[in-house]
Image (cartoon, rainbow, N blue to C red):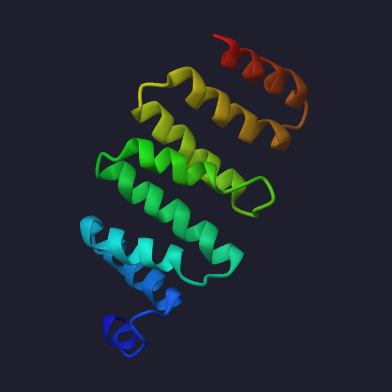
Length: 132
């Protein structure tokens, strides 16, 4: 895979994203950060941009850069097909940042729409957590 990626232009955003993903997969998280940042600064489709933000945020969280991870995850808006995925990682990052109530709120609000019977009360209870 690395050989295939090496054949791409150095500024190819998708290749940079794939290179970063490969580093992550191999457990080389620190090496993934630069290519993720370059890919995000380049020209990615909206889908790939959301993926890159989520994956970079996860990597940064694992490297102890929780605040930056939170900022990146909040950039994946509700119009993205990966919004709920981002919310799961946001809940983890908020928890790591010591913001337990906010983490629980994000997780419950992401979960609520998929609930069969209790979506409204779970959403309402989650909203109350923010007030605490």
